[in-house]
Length: 456
Ligand code: PLP
Image (tube, rainbow, N blue to C red):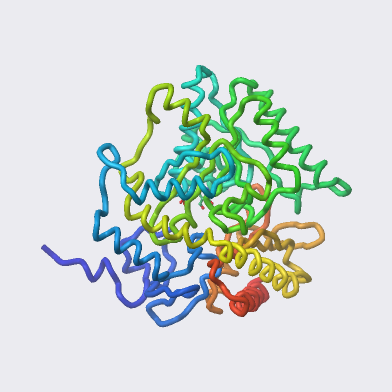
């Protein structure tokens, strides 16, 4: 048999002609990541990059953290995998205990999966099964928000309201319904207070529930701080308290998707803590494993759990790798470390430094429309016209240009294009590891500033 290893694994440089991987983008040329240490990734050509976006808001502890690696090694020496139809494991149980202890009030149980989309799918199915268990099988609608992202599997993609991601799959997506996002930069009217804007959005949700049938809606799903599709856009004051009460009024479950904004990213373990509300279900992933293992989770309320326990006695769902011991071991250590008060305090302090630095460096830039976010989760929206907030033509791919210029300056930032519905400009996300130091924040500001100057 012909050996193909060399062709399969080009050693020196990523080359589209040589790769057998179907990469996200075909025909481009990717450097190969060779090593990671702290906030830095080094490629095979010896170039070093500040991981300014933690990948996609994943690497919350940076790379090569000795304690996480030791926890993984210890677990590997014990057992790497045991199927959940036969066994539970101490690491999975401990992780669940830890998450519940840190979670907003009322979220008492945990379902462990392998990533964000899987968590969202599981949460949607839990919500549907809840109503079947309690004798309301007529409930069948999900409501989400436009310009949102909840994952790429069909159910999660259907919930997401990003027109570009949905477009070609639209005919095969389960039906979902969408209302406006909370996006003050573009949608809060002149002279409208944040409270009035929040009330207007809550009214829109209520109208949608009534239009679909008050007893036919399963859940409303939203990201507390919108990541990939809007670029770190948080809610205005009062928004989530109003949303929570509308959901309660009609018995609709509230699912919060904290896959990107959760696990300390915004300065509190859960982003919704800052809104003063508890959801019925919350999804987490990314920072949960910190990039050391693929893992996600759904935290569910006692009410939902009991409906299964006292009803059919099972949650009718499951993947082969749920509760994976290696993933649980890594996440258990990651969560122990990121939940330390000093770590979260650093996220808040460095986040403020990042915002202040970006404001000073880019606030007056002719093509920077908005700089926003919470904690170490910041977004920069690029516009063609600052006054009118008109986005650049998406064909110009401003976000990709910025990413390229940033990489040339040794910085990784997470780019997203303007939407095809013209509602939002290109933006880049910054989400560095929580261990970052002040002088490294300043380097990010300098490099992203240079990249935007050069690209736009
Ligand atoms: N939900 C949100 C809010 C996300 O940002 C993402 C990924 O970016 C997902 C779900 C999907 O997660 P994954 O890519 O791990 O499937």
